[in-house]
Image (cartoon, rainbow, N blue to C red; front, side):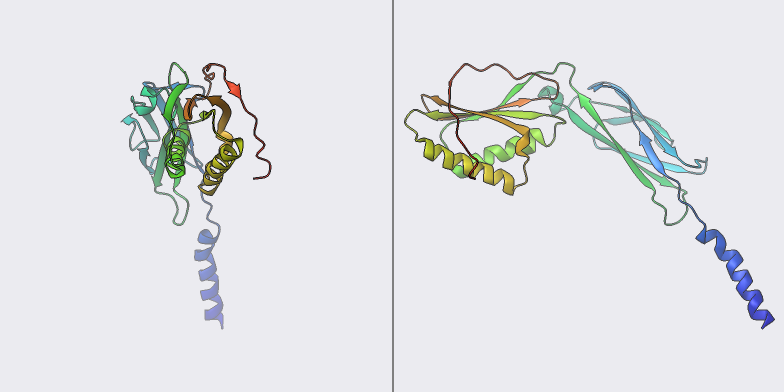
Amino acid sequence: MKQMILISILFLCFSLPAFSQTCPEIKVHGPDGLTHFGDVITLTAVIDGQNENFEYDWTVSAGKIISGQNTSTIQVLTEESEFERNNLSEFITATLKVKGLPKNCNNEASETVVISPICILPMKADEYGKASIFEEYAHFQNLFETYLQRSAGSKAYVRFEIAKDEKISDVKKRLTKIFKFLDKEKFDRNLMIFDICRSEERRTVFQVIPDGAEMLDFLDCDKIQIDFSER
């Protein structure tokens, strides 16, 4: 009996550290304020109980790590990309994996930094004339996937120019199909501002407005109000 009690006490003594184990919180801190293409940004790991035995493995979604790999602080060069050439902002995500933490503890954290062009101006992204509804779906899908979902804070101005002989009922049906397609694909229509106006022929124009830019002025047109509340 005494032997069993002794074994139980020893079991509890050796098990106690495992049950009382606490996992440190891992965070990655990025730069404050605005960051532009070409800047060097600094990202730092902040870990409770940080010690010299930790090993740090950093990866970045864009740009280039120029110093600090395998340490708690890295510097990343934000290189020129298609986003800068198109006057759009870009996300760069730095992900850190830490080795040397207690077993079963989370060992990963990340930080996302928005990189902005120095000069922020709206841009014309697309334009097309008369097209099938499926071709229109493709244009809108490209608008969202190429620009709005990849560029931080951007919105789109969509100008539907309808021919003089088009019936309002037909226009409403066409636009309703487009809106339903966007909803089905889970594209956020709140990222779009749109106008409908009469013109000589049908034309649809997409203008992308980066975060912080003002919308370009278009020539005045005979704007039409259509009630979509019954969609």
